[in-house]
Image (cartoon, rainbow, N blue to C red; front, top):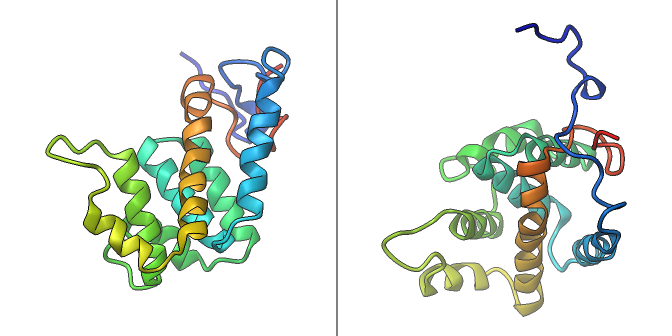
Length: 168
């Protein structure tokens, strides 16, 4: 088996072509989710931190690369970006960010012995976020949930902009 000599994003291929020619309605749904996040009641850094953690939990290189890039674009310190994987022990996150990271982990991690988001966890999060902000957190997690099957099955090329991250 030979290995490619180039390793840049353009040398990699997705498993599937761009979905929009097949399901153009996805663009409207995706744009609605993106718009909800742009108009969010929580800081963009918090959204990207929780989405980076989601990418790590899901084992998605696409999400992890995308959110690392988003955090760098908004000038988040490297310490915070790299510490997301070990956020429980890291000292660089606010209590509100910790609540958001705890929520995304709870939603994405099965809990065979009980509720994924128990009342105590909800209370910790709602101590930092009002109803509008809680719905923003929920939509940030839903955004990842909406795109997870595409990221894991179709495997868009990490590091490539939307629309250019699928093989033609």
